[in-house]
Image: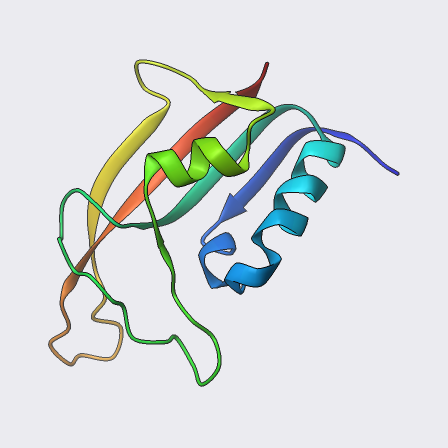
Length: 111
């Protein structure tokens, strides 16, 4: 299997069905040799929107905590002090008023 020094997941993982999270984490652990950048919806932090509506039918938008991320990607550590950043995002993509959701941007390094 091909390995990479850097793997970037920018807003994909949170749409993976929960039943497949373990398989996804195993894949990242196999192919990522050094750095993993992950951006997902956050369950905590700015925005405080709990229970995001699906992006499309049958495509959930899961919210994760830092503990979820650490538990799933155990071959990695979140780099401190700037390894994770919580920030709000306006979900208004079509001009309608939509709520603010929190996101995490994480930089993880293989242990």
